[in-house]
Amino acid sequence: MPPRKRLTAQDWVDAAYAALGEGGVAAVAVEPLAVRLGTTKGSFYWHFAGRDALLEATLAHWERIETEAVIALGDTHTDRRARFRALFTLALEPPGASVELALQPSADHPLVAPVLERVTRRRLEYLSATFRDLGFDPVEADRRGLLAYTAYLGHTQLAHATPGVLPELRGYVDAVVAALTGGA
Image (spheres, rainbow, N blue to C red):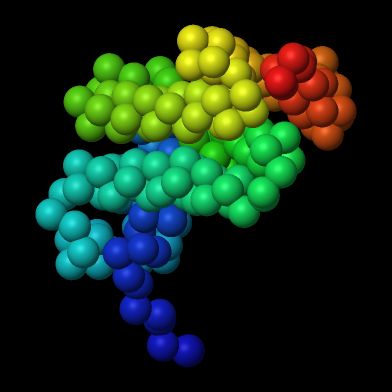
């Protein structure tokens, strides 16, 4: 039998991230994750003081890859409309969208609430800045940023609940970009 791979804290976070997307905050539980990883709870406690520490690390991971990394990728586009299109497309791709939905019912959880607040504010600020870069005045940029974010959340919810009613993603993104950047 080959030797078992020694698990890292990131292995636990990755497993918790997948579980979070599948079953929400309640799915981030030590014993099921240990089974999923083919290890013991002892491995978990080697890396984390408890479940809350794992949940905090998992939320930080979500924030990093589904907000900061998406923004960084969007920023690689010099054309402002292409940046907005790329940002919107990246945001709608799994698995981040499934984690976003899984976190919403736990918005009042003491560990989730501040992260959701921070992520939402960061995303709205970035969207507003993008619309200001497109030439909109600050008030209109804020309004369009909020519209873009609610379009993202609405699309994410529909993709989860009734995926058959949604158009093809590229066409949808093109329509949203055209509607929100018109007049710039």
